[in-house]
Image (cartoon, rainbow, N blue to C red; front, side, top):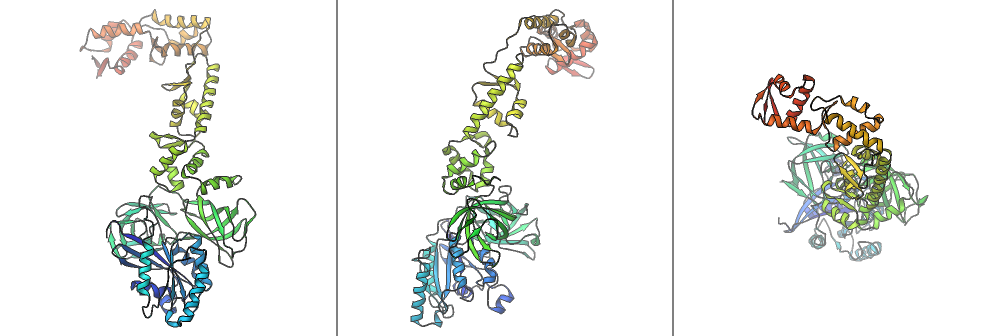
Length: 623
């Protein structure tokens, strides 16, 4: 198998007893009826699977679906991942109710390739067969099957099977290649246990790739498990890619914890949801879809109860399209572009189909229609811009991947095209209007702070962030400041660039008095609190003046209440430099400096921190 191998998933559709299973057996040699009841009753109850190496370059996986109206729910679990449908119509019965419903389902799911297969041709004469062909042409008019190949076959005699294989090969060549670079998702259609292996799940690989020994996440179980092994059409492989029927052997989970409707995905990549915004097409044959109507919701291999909430009207008439919000009774992994089917509660018939537009919509329904129009018809850049703009403080790339299912590189390109601000270091997208409003708010906050605290150099970053950016990630303050020329960050403080300290007359005098109190006392300095108490201004301003002296390095803080003038520290350093390499004790230091132990110990600890000295037991060495 070369790199150009086409992996085509072929699904059957049609009324009960029209020969779908017999047709797949004639094509592949595989009987897809697995259960004794199916063989005894001669009808398919659940999904059946087969495979065929059609040509050297085309590999087909077949999904055989049950035709009985009671098992349409099982049919829906298998039809979602197919590339082309074989619409099977028995020549002796022509078009029947499940022919119509299965055909409606295929159209609603957006299946665009198919072949009409007229079976049981050995039971009718040529005139009847021609009549059936005319009926089918009229039935398919205006649909994706208009002009599609129509092949008459007999599974009993083998007549037409070769022609059908050639038709399948021709259509398969038109299937666009699957994108294995997208993120891995595998909807589970079967879960069982194999002796010696444990839990096994099967499904049609929807996107991306899965590799042996890698970790995957089971949704909505929320469990991370390891892939022990992979099979594709019964052959062990190390990797399976999008478009292949795949069996995955899992470790770290019991098979009875797994069931149809679950989804395997990349671990930590996606989240499940109970609320989705969508666009829905109501079948022309259905009754109006009303607000808060209960429905059966089918997506991928999952089925659950749900409630439809109309966004623009109280009902959607037959044959119309509209936006709806669907509340799911159970969590499901859904992404934009995923298709689904809605069926009535009673009687249980197909009434509509739709496309997921947003798997994590805002709670507010008012005004939802315009945003959904953008999500449905807008460019990727426009859709990304909308999601980022309506978020409280932008979105990280991982969140955009989770909301869209698109590749990171594709999203980064869209972000740059949309005019958003891209923070490369943090992989974060910001709306420019958000950035402009935060700049204005920060400038206003700093102006108010400077007015109230004229002697303080600036506002602490943390205070500014908590006041103006709320629950936003802390790095966003730096992003905003970087784009704000009027503000400057210095260490942990932020100020307006225009801010200048303007001291009043008594403050100038107090500042000099505080500095002189330490400059005139050498190393035997007074207590800082006493100096501030006697400087001539109130306590608040005195502390601010002290901070100015410390910031301008006109005073040096050695301990909480112990400050020194730089000249005294410089003289002490000079005295020690003359004794470089000497080993000394605390008493010797006291003798050299003429100070008491009250000052000596804090000063020595300061010298240790400054790497002027190094403590060795009870002594120190001058470095």
